[in-house]
Image 1: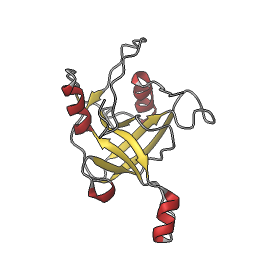
Image 2 (image 1 turned 90 degrees about the vertical axis):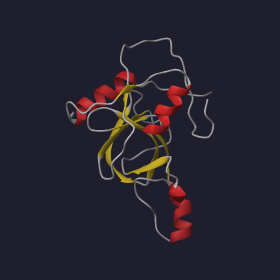
Image 3 (image 1 turned 120 degrees about the vertical axis):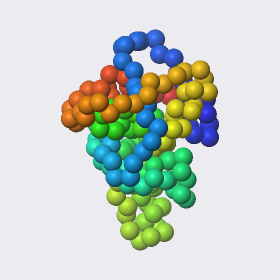
Image 4 (image 1 turned 180 degrees about the vertical axis):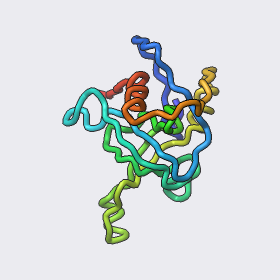
Length: 161
């Protein structure tokens, strides 16, 4: 576990044979995709896929461990992969800006201000536990349906009860 970055390494009993490749660098403006299981008690239990862009290379308070993304996220997306256009994981979805708190401070409701931990932090975390991540590649750009299929192949819903 890494409480600072809100990461945990879990062993699952089902092996799909799929794995995620990890890319450590991130570019401002690049297209991204999010896959996860948000609001699973209300929305589809088979996963949810959204698209957006990297909108800032730092998170709240200029925290460079994070990037800001415009892909919509909901409670339950946390821990899900943030993918580039080639299907590489470039981050882990962590949070969204508290719209009501922002409204109280700014007088405006923010839209699609969401955050992900950078792929470099994920890469370092995995290395610290003796796992050598497969380096990301840029061989073939994927269409959105192919990105969704790739993400669902190596993602599982994790719930705490």
